[in-house]
Length: 401
Image 1 (spheres, one colour):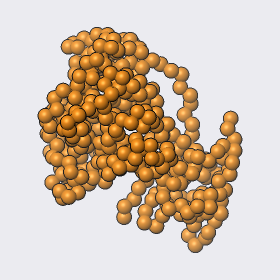
Image 2 (spheres, rainbow, N blue to C red):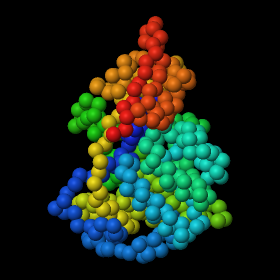
Image 3 (cartoon, rainbow, N blue to C red):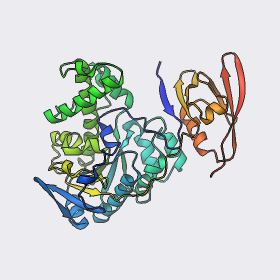
């Protein structure tokens, strides 16, 4: 049974596969005593030291590259604002550009084309690209980037592969995947020893998270080998997609938007690009204001931009507080968060959702959209099946504070 899980939150957590990309999802631990980068400014890691650099210097160098990779912590809003600012500056210097996005599997490329052509509304774009089923991060983080591409008619390129392929490789290994199911991706170049060591620590963490003894994990284990193949295939797929954009006559500047874990120290996508013969690659990363300067070492990136501190509001709690499971029978509530609005409304784990606001609940994505769009202070009727019973429940969303 092919099961897909989604959390209903106002700020939904990423549903992307757990991977080295997670290194690009959460900011490093604070180290105020060693935080020594100038905020709102560029820094170039240079040898054993680092030096300040002006915006003009950094970006003028970048537009001379074949490919430029912009990193992000996926859930940090200022990272995406920095990406937009950097994209706009690069575009002003070199309008012959394409933008590749890790967030989309290549099978939705026609949707991206229609979006850039102005043929889709925001909602149509997100629904047809299966955003809630794929990346499933809050759309407000990424829509300014997508709108920038649309209003300037900059081609958007889907860089990723389907999550099911990544999972299959992690479970069975690259060689077990039929060529017809590899989505046209070639075998990844072997990772460096340093990258392999990093992946081993991540893999060991996964083992520990499953309640197993991570210390018994060995690099010779097939499970670790398959994990490495899955991660490097992810890197390879994005590298190939960007490389192809340089193969035509126009040779646009190919900008890649992706998690910083795919970029740092050139281990991931840059390594695969080099193996494909694309040597002239630029890498730019955003860093938090309190980033430990001991970690700013040569090779981290061509340049880093230090984001200033900002007061952060307390995160909103889950809006409904359920985990959904989608299968051949429809949408089922797999889990209800204690003391959540869902629990207070009478929803229980195991309930099958039949209708939301009178409309059939056939897809988890449509349920998520309905909950997100429900105005504060209004009621949302639900019909559920609980065993042999059909129940009509009402979720009463509290008014906005």
